Length: 183
Image (cartoon, rainbow, N blue to C red):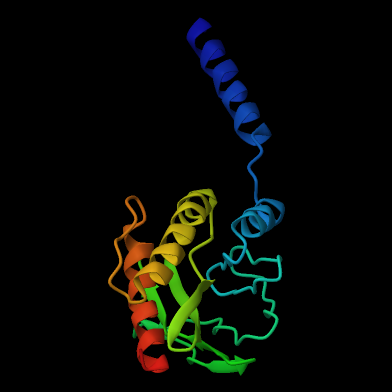
C-alpha cells in the first residue's frame, strides 16, 4: 500500500511539473533583436522570409520585404533550389539574389550588392531560424560568412565551425549570385 501511495504521489508531482513548464513559443522579440544587432542579417523560418528592415519571421510565418531589393521565395522544393533569382539596381550598384539552397535544417539564400565589378555587400535573405539552436548558430555564423565573402570577392571562403550546413548552403547560394552577376 505504501508503494502504491508513493507511486501515485510521484506521478501526480511529475504531471504537475510537466504541465507547469513553460517553453518559449514566440521568438519575435529575440529574433528582431538579433537581426537588428547583426545589421543586415535577415532571419527566415521554414517558409517565411523577411527583409532587412528590422522585422523578422519565425517558424513558418512572417514575411516582409526589404527596402530596394528583391526578396526570396517563400517555398522550397526537393530540387535544392526555390524561388527565382532577381536583380535590381540603384545608383550604380546592382543587387543580385542567388538561388535558395536547401540544407538539412532549412533553406539558405544570399543576396549580393555589386558596384564597379566588386562585391560591396552580402546579405542573407533566408537562413534556418526555426528554434533557439538555429538562431544561436546562424546569428554567429552569418556575419562571419558575410565578412569573408566581401573580403574574398568570391565564393572561395572558409566554412564556420559549428555551422557546416549553413556554410555549405551559403557558399552555394553565393556562387549562384556571383555567376548571375558575371563575377
